[in-house]
Image (cartoon, rainbow over all chains, first blue to last red; front, side, top):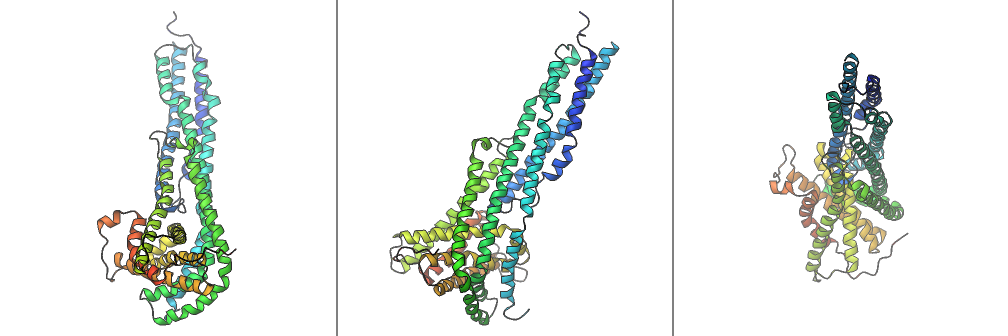
Length: 93
Length: 376
């Protein structure tokens, strides 16, 4: 047994690079979603009396999905960093 | 312009401005933009899969502490199911928004046409309303004859347009309800809580039915009381009077969405009395117009009914509005807490009950009229 090293550090670096690519692809979409998918005041106004209520729950949905997407960017970044550090440890060991 | 006619000019302008504000499609553009932004994020999230899905496979031979930590995090945070759920929620939200645009557009068209058509005849009623609300002198009342004559010229086109408008709006609302109820959307749009946005959308649509129900019940009851006064059996409800009641409640329901438009909510905040009179005149005058046509009354009798109904309803609405929401310096009573908690249509039904009975007494519906002859 060779101390658990059964993988080329290059594979870890490649996986990390994929995470970074995904992060870079997703990140620029966030300001667009935050700005353009947000409900405008009274935008459900012509849907009878529940319009205000509908607007509020859509607002929650929007916040939730925005939170999810931001979190996903952070997790991808975090994972890329972790993979690079693991690769360095493997390469150094 | 000042003098006794100033409030009349004011109200006709109010209706015209309301039409203008309905014509602007800012809200619908926004809903479409929101739907498009939801789809862009959906596509973006789905586009991550080619980069991310090969990762766990490419690291299969990796073992040790770091590998365990990696796998645990991947399962916990980056498994594809999370992204699939989010993308699905975004797609569903975009579909609902598109449907909301469609329903909103149909409502807007219906209201726009309806109000444009009825400005002339309602303005006759509004004149009477102002007199009834004690805002002006009898000189204003006298002028209603001239306005009614102008209304008669446009009336033939009104009826056919009105019927088409009712059908179009009802179809749009039905479509939206069906769409919302379809199994694909029955799943919650919210990722975590379930329900959420979709649940509320359904609840909002349910209110259409609620409004119709309250309005129908109130009208039915008022009709029964009035029939009793005239020595008819209050419970002997002919098909015609049922049809009239249904018409009255359907049509009165149309003024609900109108009251939610930016123009009227602004007016309600700044000039509650004018708003109350206008809404009351619309709610009272429009069903009166339709019912008089169902009864086959002459055009002059129709316009007389419209003026009377909208006059009494508008005046009463104005008076009650002032009573329960007094402006500074006006006499009024604060509405009790239990009343504020009732649904809006229950409030209207309670407040409108007495004047509805009064209207039936003043202009009795005729249970023995011949079958309706609808104009084309």
